[in-house]
Image 1 (tube, rainbow, N blue to C red):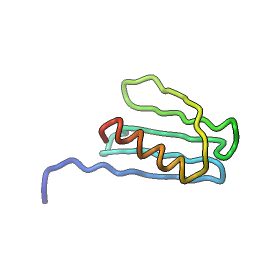
Image 2 (cartoon, one colour; image 1 turned 30 degrees about the vertical axis):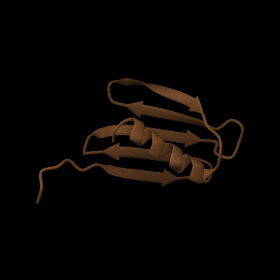
Image 3 (cartoon, rainbow, N blue to C red; image 1 turned 135 degrees about the vertical axis):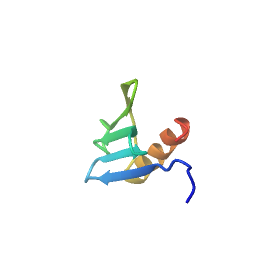
Image 4 (cartoon, rainbow, N blue to C red; image 1 turned 60 degrees about the vertical axis):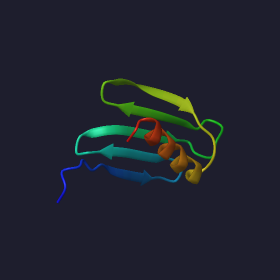
Length: 77
């Protein structure tokens, strides 16, 4: 067994929302996308030591998953 850190991505899809969390085992990143498929869709990003940030998003569930992936890459997770 190696000593490298491992993170877990949990996705919780809803009918018009997506919640995602990355833990290792502490929370590293949380994303909540709500109102998918509407013109009021927003994503909120939370991470330890940072103020939550909210931004408008567009698209459907697949777009939201891609957006979460991009946020993870930008956060170097």
